[in-house]
Length: 96
Length: 96
DNA sequence: GTAATATATGAATACTTGTTCATATATTCA
DNA sequence: TGAATATATGAACAAGTATTCATATATTAC
Image (cartoon, rainbow over the protein chains, first blue to last red):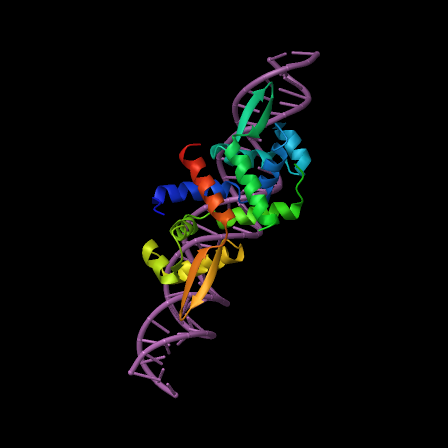
């Protein structure tokens, strides 16, 4: 399969965004619906700062989307591709 | 979604294996069928050593499989999950 | 306005990782 | 057996990254 270097890099960046256990756990939490940064941090036992840093990367790769409401920011999975990647990966880990 | 720490780590490791442009290009090449290490290296403009190192990681994550024939080793995509992950990711990068 | 809360961000540090170079193992051929 | 070829691997260095801490921005309540 032909793949330009640029697309290879983009694809690698996408998977990079999913290549950390903290980010995986953030996404796992978001599979159930939107959550605030604090709720995520509490649920994961991470500092808000660490979560916020990770969310930034996930946002930049369009894996999550932010919705601001008052002084809170609620995050959700950006689109269905992301859930599909997550589930497919989980499948590979569990049965593959 | 509940996810044990171990599974989060495993999942992150899986995506980590796909999180480098060189490895992505290796897999892209293998999408067309099996190839020797040298053929991969030539096709990608990488040294055999670098390719071999990367293949080792891909093997350990069960993303590729090795078949030895004489003094050559031919690699293929390990199973269908891998192609699916690849295509789904490419889809997200291109249209998403 | 000030205080308090929620999130974001920059810098620093510790950790991880990809490549190169040198060397080792395995296989074929003479 | 010895030479040549294909691949693998260990060590070392450079480049990238996740977290922490301190600080900044934004919003609400008073």
